[in-house]
Length: 93
Image 1 (cartoon, rainbow, N blue to C red):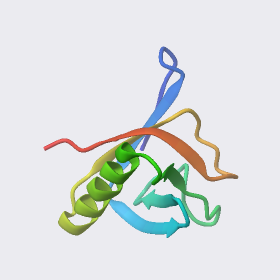
Image 2: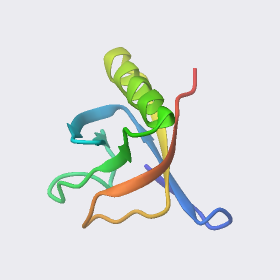
Image 3: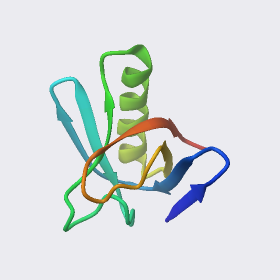
Image 4: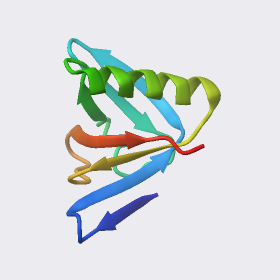
């Protein structure tokens, strides 16, 4: 599910972690049922591991994947043709 927010000029999507794909200084990931980043497009949400917040997001992403907990992603756009940087991750309990 993807929600568009005109006020914040961002989108939100949420779901269970489908795939985590670390490369160099980035973590790429997809959520199950996410229409923005799904096959056959083979694109991902991504963030950098070079900051402390990126490392915290990676830990949160791994935890959500291991426990089957839903996470929310906020990003500037839903581009199906390219991988997209995120603004932030949220995990509700």
